[in-house]
Length: 253
Image 1 (cartoon, rainbow, N blue to C red):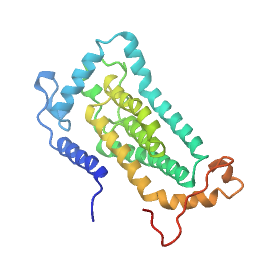
Image 2: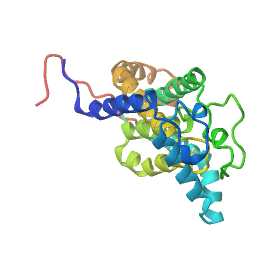
Image 3: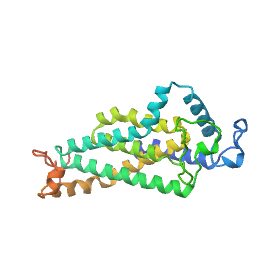
Image 4: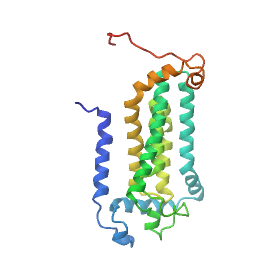
């Protein structure tokens, strides 16, 4: 069995991330935080968090206000973009509609995995660990709302991959929104950098894998549902392109 090149980088990144998180160094002595309070957080993540939050507090108020709102607004904009892509897919072939639907479902699944991981790992929020550090968010999420991984980043990068699978041009256009939405979670002080990285990997990997596994059967299902009077109107606009099928026993050159 051969491994496709596009899966190598995410796989290697996931292994490296797991190794870093599983083998943290002693806590940052200069930060004045007890080692037993950040024993599951690598030094570099704690230091980057402090550097970013301290820098964020020096930025102009308009920047801070924008980032505080964009941390949720970015997700909304990505979701609206996916809906627009879905609307466009109604006029396209069944495979395009199937890919759009399957990847949208995959984003929901990725969020579920991320939420399960948060409740299983019980990683404390950095804004409680570094409680003396002012944050843009002003209030830290309540106890029990854990840090690792970042649900916002999972959804953001899952949506970007879902959009990219339907239209690579639109995917490239909205990629900066996902990056900024993920970075904003550190900027406002509620996540470590590795929380965001883990969310990125979960969202992107789950969406890619589910889409690869379900695209073909979903295409056949969409093809048949488009002939139904009710669902047909939802899945296909008037004049939508039919599915492209090849004659049996013939291969493309």
